Length: 326
Image (cartoon, rainbow, N blue to C red; front, side):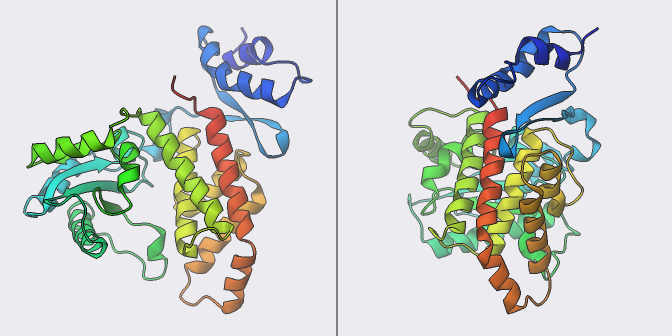
């Protein structure tokens, strides 16, 4: 009996002589239409770098043992409530990100959003201090034994807190709150006003929110790599790893044990080139040391275009595989 993949390849995919656009359209819908056949789909086809069509394993999320999130959602919500319950400035607090939409893995951080009243806009420094304080409390509650390494501490924070009504955050509210779960709402009127502001043009779906998030990450990396905006190199690499994590989850690849190994997982699947994946991994390793020689900084700066190439390849793979909501 033909498997689902053979059925899709023979009956749904165009001729090898067809245009790349025709192949892209067929590849996007083939896994969905092939569900009519009874046997399981075991692989997915992707246009990779250089215009080649490549197959890689499609792993069911429940079958990837190392993709099981280490924390329960209710445990996180309880920790957020305990952290902000005594803070009089907090009018509402949300659990956001992958833990809220059910796509978290053991490499995911806990994203928390808080709304502060009474005024619609607050001082940036005040917002940063409050966010850092709440971040510390939630981290102590959820990860009491966590100690960041002194050198690569920039690589990952288990908890990240953002003030939702701080300057610069309002344009991103629709995507941040699309799948957010309220954890603490002592002022329902403030919560309603904040959500009305966020969803004035309609509430995006979870898929639309994730798509907006990875587009913002990829394009920020490209702009920074081209010198169009300021960014620290550590911030760029951290965003590269976050983008890689999202791609590994969306493409249903096996999640590696360490964040540093995410680019290699994408290179193995043909999503990015081995050269760009190796550069990201080596840059992370170099900047995780105690002392970074000046010549290393020069080499990293000269090769920032590789970060842009890496980000564009990841974004292209995500755009091809993840369907757009109607």
